[in-house]
Length: 288
Image (cartoon, rainbow, N blue to C red; front, side):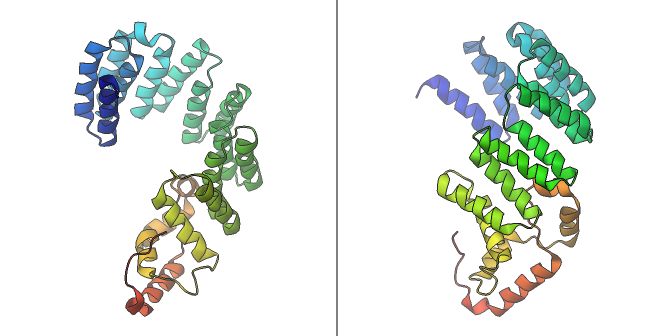
């Protein structure tokens, strides 16, 4: 493993640990060694944005246009987006796609921002343009989200299926389908998708899968009559906060995007009663 690789890996780890000041210092040090590496310039923008130094990030982009070249407008859009200035971000992304009309990334970013502010017609327009350019994953996922917001659940399923058929992203689609199926209370479909992930991929997030598996088994009655270690199920899945429950169940987009679990208040009470009645049987936390 080369020293260069180790240094780049260190920056990634610092970002993960949210040590952005230190990451910024490491980037500056690496730029002295690799002054033409565009990824370092991008990471510098990311670090400054994470630190809330948006004006400095924009100045950095302007001063290094010879490095960013046709990516300049896109990077400015990223800074504006991180700063919460959606309108300005869209303007920069539109300039970016004018410079690179065959790069679908810009269309996806514009579509996602329009979706964020609720302009669904414009969002669909840009997702469709990305699809025409060959993007078969994020665009279909975006169109699926919009279909959910418009309460057209069959169309939402259709777009998720297209991720598999046309994009070949079975794993990506399965994750999205689980969330959609849970919302629609089609737990058998969700359970089948979950098993597909468990059988097909060894590097999936075990905690998320664990929570989804226990939730679906509870809903399908697999665990309802004989819950082993109910304290673990309760501890891992249930957040007993009425406001959060109502907010989660009323906010469709938040429910889908945050992978929320649709337990009702009565079901939580049932789990609590089950916990009380099985105290003597609880010996350890249950593995998945």
